Structure formats: C-alpha cells, structure tokens
Length: 124
Image (cartoon, rainbow, N blue to C red; front, side, top):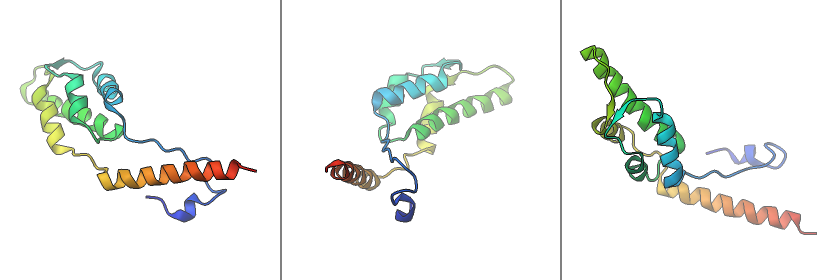
C-alpha cells in the first residue's frame, strides 16, 4: 500500500488500477513462461484455473519454481528432465497467492473512488 501523501495530486500523475489477471490472462502467462521449456503432462489451462487470485508475478513464479524443481532433478540425475505435473503441484503448494480478498476489496473501493473523483473533476 502506498502512503496517501504519495497519491496526492501532482505527485504521480495518472493512477491506473491493474487488477489480478483473469483465467485467460493467467493461461497466457503460463504458456509464455513455459513456451521454450520441455514439459510433460502440464496443462496450462489447469494451471490457470488453479491460480485463481494469483497476481501475474505470482503466476510466473509458480512456473519458475516448477522449472527450478526440474533443473534440480536434472542436476541430480545428469539427464535432461521435463517439467511435469508434480513440479507444478509442488510450486503451487510453495507459492500461495499474496493478495487477500480484503486487499482486493480495498483496491476496488480505491478504483471506483478514483473513477468518481475523475468524473467530478471533469465537470464544469
């Protein structure tokens, strides 16, 4: 959260609210993060469904953690390893969403308040 002093007029210019990504956006993030990585049994649509409430960065971190787990296996075995569903499951257990429902409600209140304020400022 930012201090209200930082958000006063003239400090940051335009404020834009960017919420957590919806399921199609999370799927696109997963597909992008795993596009050049061998995977076996990893369903991007399922990962997107399971990351409801995750930010874009958190969704990408799930993919990165899964990749790191596969790399660790590769180092241990000396054989190329693909990311698998167990890697993704372990990453999901390790990385929970950090934005609470209450924070999302606060952001929505701020967003709608900012929208109303902007409309009020534009009226003569």
